[in-house]
Length: 361
Image (tube, rainbow, N blue to C red; front, top):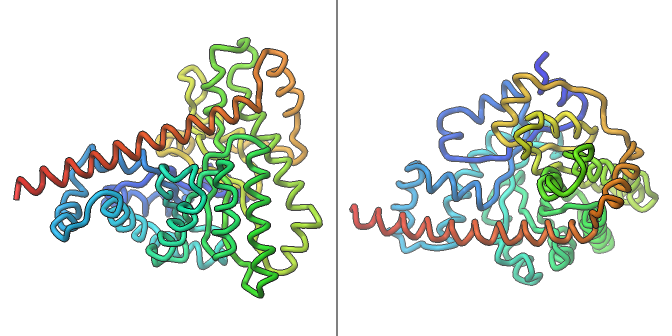
């Protein structure tokens, strides 16, 4: 049995952290679904920027939409949905057979809205309607300003992928916002079956402290943060509050591991995939890491539901001078800034391509 199938059988989903038009048209995504147990997909502005900038697969669509007067952000979302609807259709049988537990693709609201609650809510609703697919999630950054947007979007029936979470505390805030949205739906007599995932980024922790802690602590912080967060996730699912929602028909917001490619060139390339094998979670995995795991990865012991040695390891980092709360806030802010930059680069790339294609006739 393939190692990716073993991981899937251990009740962890593998979602691909990539999308390009070539991936769809040349059959690669279909092969990953059939051969490597990929059951979903996530995207972000950086992924689309690289895909559009480094090839000509989008040129015909850019030319067509530009000729109709479409430009800027609107043009990007048209291009993105052309890809994501194709991907959603490939995953639709998985979505149907799992009753909506799996088989999703994700598209992010404009990163420029990360600190604007009202506009995030408005765009999330608009993008969900524009997707025309039930298995498209809308990504909302888990900043403090994003928390009420998560609640309101959930209440309005938008499937939300909460992104840019780095700590247990940030995860819990997003999870509680999701539950508040569900509780409001139930109180209003609405169907509580609204899908959601909460994406906690892992490897960026280790990159941030790589040269600031003793060698014995190298590449251990991200996994300890994941273990601490997983314990809170399992505790939440066992809570009376969640059980009441589940009895009313609500669906659990699954925990998703993001940023799972190894940043340290001296560390094993499948380190995070193996360490983050946890039941009832998702790993959104970069394409190179997926292929490496399929080639030489192993499914080892599952992550302990009680957090294992997480607190002891995190205490070691505190003693080494790492302020976890401050670093989590910094990583979230840096992540938002990086997505802003990618978004602006993407808008410039699309504008430049549109102009070049127009001149070329």
